Image 1 (cartoon, rainbow, N blue to C red):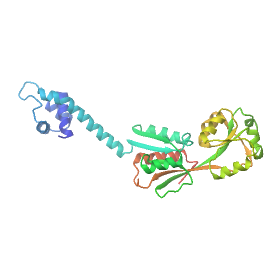
Image 2: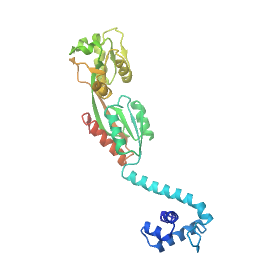
Image 3: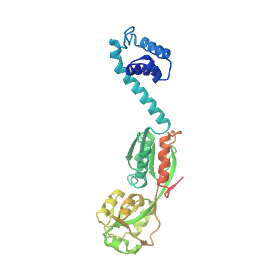
Image 4: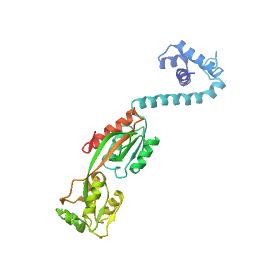
Length: 298
């Protein structure tokens, strides 16, 4: 039994004759007859009543018809999905990423990918670097965004992302009303300055700035973001995390004289066992590189 036999059977029933079905399928009538004979041999019984004045299905043909059409639809769908998969239009992509790297150019990448690949199943997991590495090694994800530096003989780096770190506060915070401040004033005027340990360089600088014995806040990036959104102090965040807030005026960047040019470095990686990447994963990487082109380096 093959798809051509099922197509012939379906068209004969729909059009009411062997000759019309032959024309619809662009084959000869003898070919249609041979296909039906082969189908009847496969199912073990006659599907059409022979010798009548009009074309009729046998009782067995009536029972077989809905199953034949279901099978035909499944085969056609399977062929279409396979073609889409070859073209990179169908399949699945599972990515692990840092919680602080889920907005801005990351989300705009997903918007573009979904628009061009609506049949692509996309799953995003957020976790910290070690957890993402574990998911990658276990095969639970295909791509992962990690804090750099991170070295593992089992992963291949695909992209480097260099994001600037900015001092930000809410637009109605007193600090936002000043055109600029000296770095020595930051902790006092922020009231409080919220510490986030992005990397060793930032950690060292913040330890030097922090007044001895003064109570402070040391929190994860997302918590710092939530605090400044509520008008509490100022903090050092990635441009990615606050891009929309800066654009819409909810947060503002504070110009700090003498502030070092800090950045958060992360990498997009895959497991070395995945030598050949499917087209849809390559397409995600291509779009991501375009969206994050200011911050991405090979």
